[in-house]
Image (cartoon, rainbow, N blue to C red; front, side):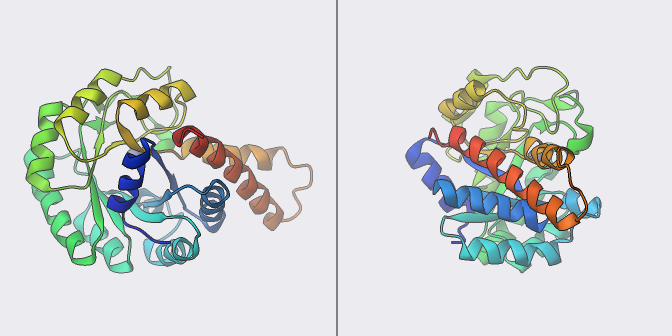
Length: 278
Ligand SMILES: [Zn+2]
C-alpha cells in the first residue's frame, strides 16, 4: 500500500526502528526492494534520485508511475520518495506524478536560501498530501560512484536543525553526523552523541544518508540514538553486480537481470532485518 513518509515514520517511531530507503533506478531493483519488504513484512521507502535522471538511468516520468504501481499493489506500506531534489521544478514534477514524499536538498545553498526553497516545497507538497524531507549540514558529494570519503561533509548543528524545522515545517530532517554517500574511503566515525543532541531539539524524525559500509553495530547505535530512516543503496547495487560477475553462463541479459534482482533482494532483506531489530 502506498503511504506518505510521515505515516511511515510514525510506524518507525512506534517500534523504535529505522525504515530502509532504497533506490529503484530500474524494474529489477524496484522488485528486489518490494519483494524483500514483503517477505519480511516490513515498511519500506523506495526512491528515485534526481541524479538517476542526470546519469541517463531512468526518467522520473517513466520510472515514477512504475514505482507507484508497485507500491500500491504491495502488501506492506511503501512510500515513493524523490531523493535529493535540487531544483523546485523537478520536485514539482515528482509531486505531480504522485510521489508521496520529496526530499528537497538545498544543502549547497546558504542556510537562508535553503529555508526559503524548502518552505516552497512544503507548500507544494501540502497540496498533494506528500511529506517533505530536507537537509541541514552536508553529507558530501551526492554521487555514489565518486564518494568524496566525507571530505565535503559539514556536521549538523542541533540549534540550526531546530531553527530550520521550525521555519520550514518539514516532516523529516537529513542530518550529517559522520556518514557519507557512496563508498567509504576510511572507516566511518559516527557521532552518536550528536544524533542524541539533535533528537532532543527537534520533533521530526532524523534521516541518515550514506548507509552503505556502516557496521551492523553502528546501525543499531544510530537507531538507538534516534535515526528513523536510513538511505542505503551502494552495497545493494554492488551485490547485484557481484552476483552477475560470478555467473558462468552470461548468454542472455534477462538471466543476468534476474540474477542481480535476487542478489539485491537478499542484500536488502539482510539490512532491513538490522534496521528493524529482527
Ligand atoms: Zn543522500
